[in-house]
Each structure stands twice: as structure tokens, then as C-alpha cells.
Image 1 (cartoon, rainbow, N blue to C red):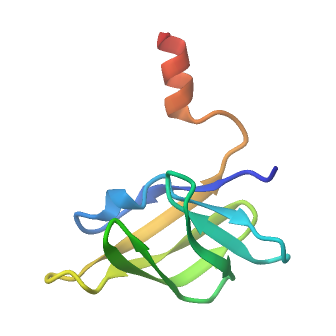
Image 2 (image 1 turned 90 degrees about the vertical axis):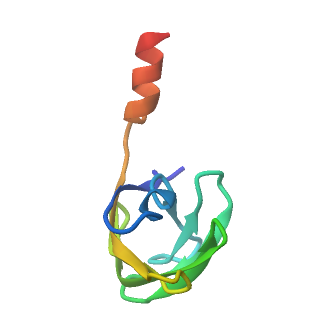
Length: 110
């Protein structure tokens, strides 16, 4: 199974943490990706590098622009235009090869 390309760095407004740990996985067609929330629910599918997309997360309609993705990393700009004071920021995602730092930390203290 391919590695999750997990969002690990987000800047911007108060809702930025909603994106943290959401992730991308390669789709069936080469060069396309699917986007999932932290509970493994599909948010968007058949995404390609260079194409903007929108999705609903935590009762907000998010828009991603300047989207770039490969099998090992992704980045882009986000906005939530429906909020009274529009929020925006950026995100970075990386594919992992081992256990998550949080999981490793939990295992070490168990």
C-alpha cells in the first residue's frame, strides 16, 4: 500500500488545525490522488497537480489553490471563503516511511 502523504504543516487562520493530519493517497489512475480526513473519509477524489479543488470539512467549504502533488509530497494554499472574516493559509504534506512521531512517542511511554 502506498504511503499516506499527510499534511504536517499548516499556516493561517484559526481553522488551520482542521487540515492537520488529513492526507492524500494515489488514485487508480497514475498522477491522480484522493484526499481524506483524519477518520479516513473521502473529501475529494481524482486530484491532479496544478488543479484547484474544493471540499467540505467540519461544516466549512474549503478551497485549495496552487496545488502541487507528487508521490512523496504535496503543498498548496487554502481558504474558507464562507467565514465572515475570510481565513486562508498554506499547507505542506510529506509521505512517511515509518511510524508517526506521535505513535512512536506513545509506544515509548507505554
